[in-house]
Length: 158
Image (cartoon, rainbow, N blue to C red):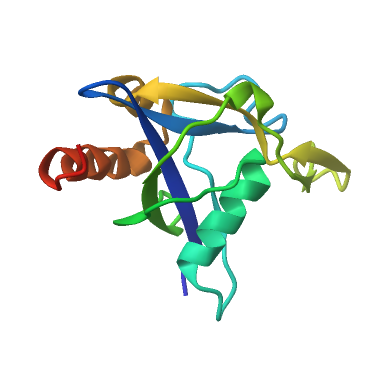
């Protein structure tokens, strides 16, 4: 069975018809010098029996320090290059990315060294227009941005 993650895509409107999304940059030395194609929606794996939306809201708070609330709407799922299935929801909100506080995790670094270091899961967040976000986000997550833009244009969520 493939690994499964659930995540949330927060969006805001700066002016009518100008949409921005919050993306986060993974922490740690592996991603330190990576930018374009490295950003992601806040997300994480969930356990058997855990509801994906509950996991998504938990992961959002763990990775950003912000509480997700409001009306969540389903963006469906995507399959990442490694085979992980990511289910996502969107919600309208706002936050100051400079106040982001992420939980930490342990990783082996350098790889195969046996040495463990503690890193933040996320080292920063930022607001991007949809066009900018498509340049920064992992390419397999671009359909989530497209689905958000389509839903807001066609779904009466203007």
